[in-house]
Length: 262
Image 1 (spheres, rainbow, N blue to C red):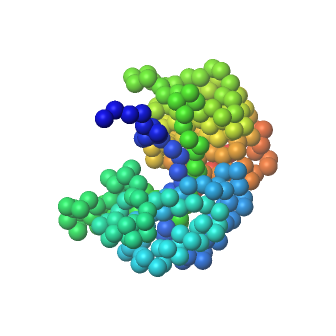
Image 2 (cartoon, rainbow, N blue to C red):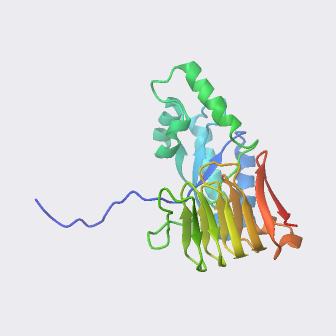
Image 3 (cartoon, one colour):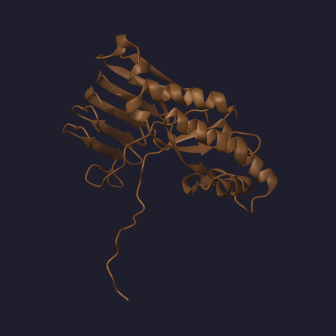
């Protein structure tokens, strides 16, 4: 029987924050998230959050996990899934009524992974993370009209037109060079480094696929948010004496650094 569907289901890309839990202290995690939301409400208020228990020695029990989800909701964000982990973590997700985010699946043990291999995988993943729980900066939904991807084989992506509010540019597996202004409410993302020869008033996210060596260079710095490999700073965290200056942004030992260019 042929009939018109009432809704079209498509699998798209959405920006979701990932909260990797390092210390299972519900009150402390709730307080930290509340502070993040208060510091940058436009970015984090009602943001979708993936809860990642992969940094803990064991999977929490259902009651503790449920208390954490309630604390995060009270702090102003919306937990929407668990990051994929062990089979215990999968059972926890079922008990909580939450899905598992498939993109994290390869970073953890699979059901047929032996215990030593699983432990090694968790150790490798742990070394790649910061020393404490950190929520990655959420990005707005990517519409095809606002999203530009560099064709495969090109050495880098160059954009000469201004990036206006609501637009998003993504340079996949390469650097991104912007010759004009990135306006407030606009977002530029690169798997490599980002070079902006105009003013940066929106968001710039470099090293989007966990490239911690990526950098951001900007001629006039007024950013709403900058991020390297998921580690971020928002406008309220940026020293006032750097605003309007030519700067570079880089990551060192899990911490974002911003300095004026000579």
